[in-house]
Length: 264
Image (cartoon, rainbow, N blue to C red; front, side, top):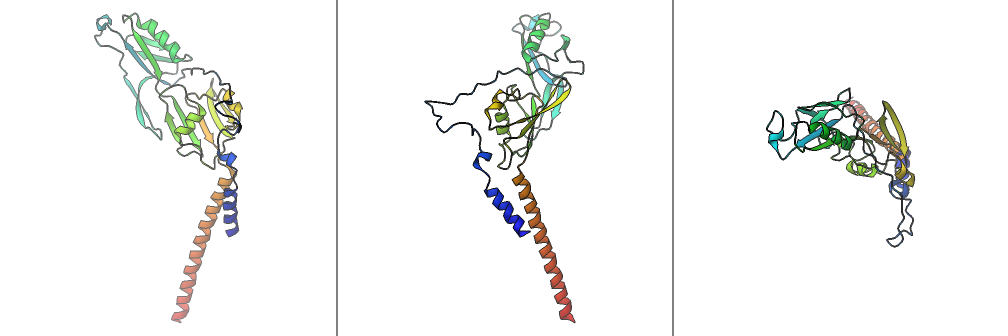
């Protein structure tokens, strides 16, 4: 058992620095005079999905132009509770129903599923012009949530204030990958067209910059597997605990036996 514990410590000390560092593909000759250049993928705006929550505001400089109301803007009547590790909060907005629609005061039901927030803004602006004079419409995703799991410092759900987030930015939100996490074998789960898809990403390869998973989408799941060294270390800790427990019980039993013999 002692040998196993020593072996675990030895394995931990032998972890290559390249296994725990980023940007290993950047050559030693790279400098501000001769930087290494990587072509970045084009960002594609996320599409609105069923059960997404949208924050919608409509404003006008002429409140008297609003039909049936003298207030500026559209109220947000629905509240949705979220329980993320970092920022548990209540999201206020309109949930996209199973038919892909949201229902707004005055405007009524509007189909938004499959649209970007920019496209949804255009659709809502056209409909709002019936009730508002020169309306200014804003639409944003209120529940752009990603889930970080595995060997990161702070696993949990994270609500993102914008719609553009990269893998590296997501990892920084979770406090980075632990020393014992696998940077070459990250798993990303994404739901598309009613199907769950999984891919493996190597952060120490330039290929991941060209991946459609470089920019994350709402409800993505990022899992960082632990290395074998962590499993060995965990086994060693368990072994040490059992060794100490066994030794303690043995000493207690010996003390009881010795006391019994002395009484005789």
